[in-house]
Image (cartoon, rainbow, N blue to C red):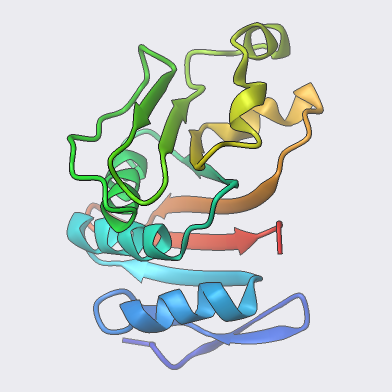
Length: 178
C-alpha cells in the first residue's frame, strides 16, 4: 500500500495517506498542516470521498483551484465537496454555463469551469472576479487559465488530479491561503 511512506515538501514532512483507510486523517492534515498532501484515489468513490472531506473542512471564502486532464475526476471531486458542505442536489459540470451555484448546505458552492475560455480577455469579460472572494466556497476547474489575468484571489487552495491508470488518481492538495 505504501501508506506510511513519507514525502518532503517545503521543509515539512507529511505522511502519505491511502484514500481508503485514512479519510479522517486527510481532514486533520488539511486543518493542521496547511501545506501539501498527496493521496492516491483507487476509484471514483474514493475521489468523491476525498472531496467530501475537503467540503467538511471548507471555510467561508475558500477558492479551490481544481486542475486535471479531461476525465481525471474533477467533477466527481466537486460532487463530494458539495456533499461535504451538506448540499444534496445534483452536481454537474458547468462547461456550457460557466458557473453553477448550489445552496442548501452550510455554505454556498460556486462551481466554475473555465475550459471554454481561452484568453485573458474572455475570462475578464466573463466577470469571474466576484467568485475569487466568494460568499461561500468557489471551485474553479481549469483555474490555470486565470494566471495571466493577474486577479487577486482570496484564500486559495489548489487541488490537482493526475491520472495514474484507468482507475487510480493522484490527488495533490496545496494550501496557499494559510
